[in-house]
Image (cartoon, rainbow, N blue to C red; front, top):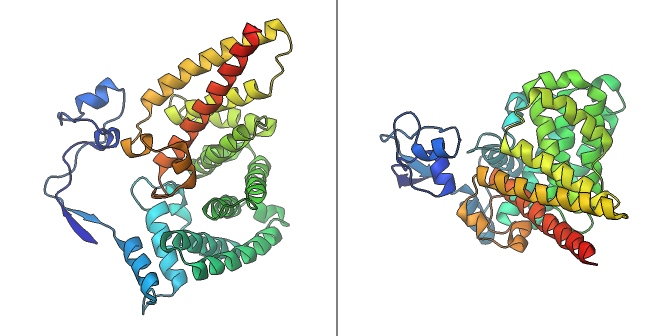
Amino acid sequence: MVYCGPPSRSCRQCRKRNIKCDKKKDSCGQCIRASLTCPGYHNPQDVTFRDETPKVLRKAFDLGFPLSLAYSVEDRAKQIFVARYVFGDSPPLDWVKPFYPSAGADLFFRHTFKAVSLAYLSNEVGSPAVQEKARTAYCTALSLTNKALHSQDTAKKDTVLLTVLLLDLFENLTRDETSAASATKHLDGALALIKFRGNKQFEDPVSMSMFTHLSTSLIPSYLSRGLPIPKSFLRLRHQASRFACTDDPSWRLSNLMIQLATLQTSSHDTPAKKTQALATAQYLDLEFLDISKAMPRPKTLEMMSTEELLSGKDIDSASRDLVTERSLRLVRRLLDEQLRKLNTQDET
């Protein structure tokens, strides 16, 4: 840890939006005007430390030193992965907390967690040796998970669904041209599991969080490939909406992406259908502008090109902001394509 001095006294929302905070008592004026919940302010007596672990590990690997005399590579990988994804600052997998480390009793979960942790560490330090360890653990995890799915009682366990979602995360961390198909299979597998578990699961906040996590991966996957969103997923989402905050910008963005996917895959072979499709696209365009204004977007990501965002270089892959920015860029690009296509058809 490196001492960085006292923290900023601005609220977190203003820091994320890169705007000046008026630091008013109870809630700052910027948050009130943007209809956002103000998270409050740091204690001015606190101090800030920056975690330099990945940078130190990268230097250690470059120099050929072992990661630690006390910990194995696997243990160190788990520590770093958990710190970033589960217990970090606004971690994307905070819903894993109830399972860690108690879920270690399931062998399929242990090997999956090991594979994902090593894959993350491999990305951080750029080590082929660690990547090879990750792929070995991944193959073992796949075999054990397939065996677990043969039992109906085991297949309904939260740890099985969690494991399949982590297998999808592994594919994202190690993605290349050959892994896209298998990544989609994990998403479809998670969808089948959620359907098998029934609607009562949505009453549980952790299960609801896992469904939300699946949504943020599945919807963009189908949308980017020009495929209709599976009807089974839409039915589950309808049931889940009873327990979700449907006014949340992230939920609204998901709804917009579903409507855009429907627009992409619909037939516009008559003048009436073309007119209706153009009106829908224009409505979605206005809705997108409203949603994007309500979602804080760090300047560092806004200034990046789409190619840089997709490559993930120089970006914290555990960042929720990165997932949001990629979804916003995807919707903007596909909406522009639809509007251009429909306007061209209208002119002809």
